[in-house]
Image 1: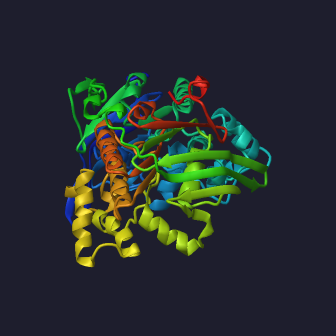
Image 2: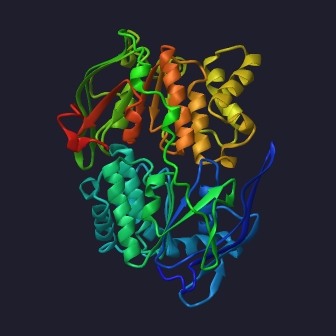
Image 3: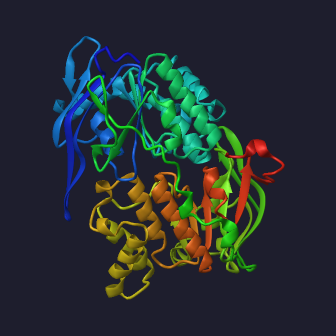
Length: 500
């Protein structure tokens, strides 16, 4: 990284204020710094610090409230990106910026190759001879080439993220902007993706990555820490940029009890899977995501489900929740055959008996957080109508969001949206909580709060099942189930399959 060169980006006194029914909220407050060619810049901070908002300012996805974002072009001219109209901005972004969204944003009806080619279609540079081969090459770079002709529904969350990264590289942009690109990946896949980014930087590209993973901070060229919308910490001068040193303090393990201290699991089965198999059929042929799974989960048990990307973790959750049908086998919950019900019966049963935490929140954007929490109560007609708001406020207080109750999802961070999704899962006091990467978008402190909450719920007799790629969380659960290639495996006999 050469800081004597002209910066790629210059941020000057950038502020972003959201206006909601609850008043104004400053997501960024007078932020100024530069980004240099060939730099690998990490942006870290707690949930709600302003990290994702900052990326939106860089990419022009959201308009700033004050200040200026300059992009210095190869011809030596400086472009104020927020002065462009929407069409100009979209073209500039397509030509110069590769964006890796936290939630993939893949089109479900297209196979992976065609998803990767979308940016070329948009810019009108698609070539029938070279574009598919280029897309396949990019998919191979992120180690998913063998799945190139599958649709997104037939690959795992981690594999979808790799497709999103391949797509961001399609137009050979100078700058890659990534919002938690490794947040949904197991350790092995995370390392693969990180090395791809390191290779891009070595070849002269500029990469800006948001992460809450403090373990990555030593691998960036620079780390910028944000708190409450401002650059904070022991700031140091770096070629005119205000850069904060990252707190060296590790995870707060003192806040977590060990699983052995609180194991109160009942012997009664809450959930039973018998010979469950799931096979997807697509243009590329058949793909078996789960193979003859036999498992029992007990009331009061806190269970982690781990495995590398594509191992079948999310598919297993879909079988447990009745979201997707098994190809064969039976799923029984509280002595009820889940797939013996009609779709409408199953939807109502799910609302009353299961709390589901999706990986990407699924909050309704036009409702406030407290209104989102009340939705399951309204749908299932639980609690008296006059009691529902008070109950929702109690749940928001449980996850540390009471002060944000009247804000819309767009006015809070992704981590806070995840916490709100967890509160919503508890709305009807269900006996079973199923969570897909519930702490993947949270900083250490917020993750600790959620894990403590799950442990207390298990002690009260609820069954808690979480999919996670974080090996540090498994020691706080009563039991860990490891999946590989759609099968349950013995972790001790297959250490190479560990997510650690």
